[in-house]
Image (cartoon, rainbow, N blue to C red):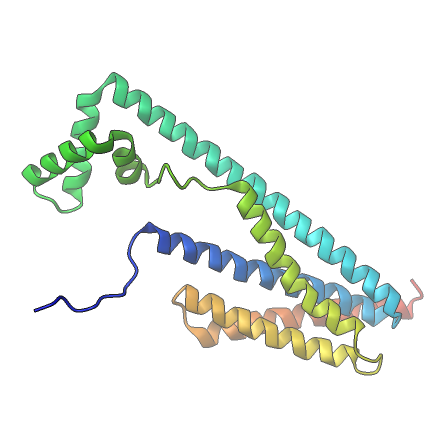
Length: 236
């Protein structure tokens, strides 16, 4: 009988893609919340469209650049650590190959293989590509897929910008009498969507994640609007 079709994805690439997708959702969420808090706060102090646009653009650019720079530094540090670990493993394989073979055998045995099978698997993996075998089994690193700081920075920049554009456009495009409530509704809807997406990606309870996300965004807008209104009333 022919083997049944099986479309389930396998391999480490799936987890990596999910991590990138989750980071993109969270970056967009940060863009929505921070920019919404900023423009709603400014709206509490003034109704000037030019002022709102200036403040929103400044917040969008500052936030996206900050996210990109922070992600670049973080991922660069991770990449340096991965390269250092690979260099050390390469040196150990050159200087003490028998000890490294025994170590790989032990690691495979701890994963459930019998000692004989673990030894044979370690020998075959070592003959094929010793560094790759130790990198994946011992270090959890794929030498061909080291983290790229430029990709991470670009993804964070784009995700934050995409999220920040929503409250910015919502506050400057509608008529003055309707811009505040339209912004609040759009922001809360976007936060519900990002809360749902992050919960689904993380296999977490959806209602709790959505409620937490929406409540946090609503609180941020309420606090900044109150502060802006007080400052506007004081003539600051």
